[in-house]
Length: 120
Image (cartoon, rainbow, N blue to C red; front, top):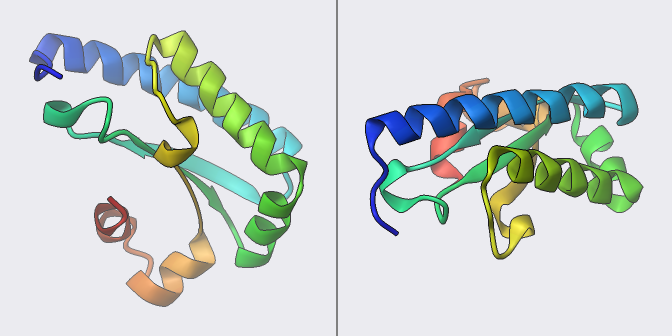
């Protein structure tokens, strides 16, 4: 896909942030242990580079959520947010990651920037 202009990238980022924030707030009210989410993308390789990471406080909460209906709910919230932002992906689940504050503290000393860069 052709690289995005700075203006288009800025618009997309605003849309993604707004839509994913709504998904995050909904999930915080519904899913035990869920804390926050974030996204990363490379404008030169969009949408293939888009990664959305759902973060739990503890590994145990993440494990329980992924074993139950919460995983489907998070994927549905992600799909809804991306649809609202005008982003189409062929294989949504490939773009979604699940993580925890506990794991980041243990392996990256709480450095989320470094951890997320390594999760490409």
